[in-house]
Amino acid sequence: MTTRREKLRKRFAAFRAKFAGHLLRTHPRVILKILAGTLLLFPWLVVSLLMSFSRVAHWRKISVCKDFLKRHALAFDGVDRESLTVESVSGGVSNSNQIWHCHKSNGEEIRFFVKIFLAAGSFWAKHLAFVSPFPAIYGGKTHERFTVDMVSRVQLTELGVPVPRLIAYDAVEKVMVTEHIVGETVDSILERIGVRQTLGPGDEAVIRQSAIGLARIHRAGYSLIDTQPVNCIWVPVEQKVYFTDLEFCGRQDKRVWDIGFFLCFIAVRLSGSVRQEVRSLFLESYKNEHKIDLASVSEAGAQLQEYMPIFQAILDIRSFTPEELFEGLIAP
Image (cartoon, rainbow, N blue to C red; front, side):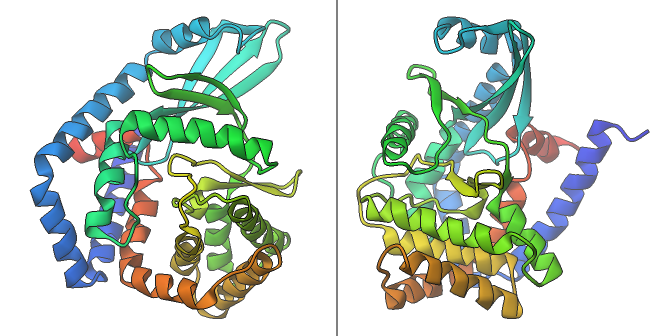
């Protein structure tokens, strides 16, 4: 019988092979820029990673999570704290994501999504602009990212934008609990389209709603910056796309970047005629809701082109939890 550690070792071996392939396809100029930035900032990178893994280990303790439920008892009225089980979910190292499984006093099962903000995410937010076209983030500290995410979630909800509902938060611990959205990431759907090389039933609605949702956010005067499709959840029963990562959301005008960044991940996942079909579908749907400067979007896409192998590597990293990444890195 294959153990969990053996499965992880195989997954990590496959990850290393793919990562090496991505590096071989990356322009030397990009690699040198990233290496220079990493060497220059290496001490701070190590410190942020160590702080993050310590925090992840702390929040893996069931007693810590139960204490959170107890401190925020009014938000979890009727929830049996003793029934709590904690499931880590993938998402890389910027934040630690969990699903809390609980039962109500009447026996009904209920799940919550938990986002634990990490120092590693703040390190990326502060320094990504040094080594890539990613916009400079105003307010990249951990407590600032937490505050922006929480406030933006409330504001967008009031505007009717589909985002997971905020249930509880702890400003001291920088931990946020939202409703658990049952659906599939838009990135997973794009990946499936790429395998088939054609749109399947319902795929067109996913692309259209992704564009319409982003256009409505822009029309309301907000930009998201981190518009990766992996941060968007398609809920078929509602025919809606939920935007889940709002820690860089703000009033600065980054609309062109938002569109270009999303399109870049379409290009990562798709190729050939289906790539162009999905791209056109997205832009057409966006234009029906909000005006768009296609020339500027194309310019942003051109700047991102040479970073596509890096984005593929990021998607591979995000398939692991922080614990799995740490274990994979130190395992023989």
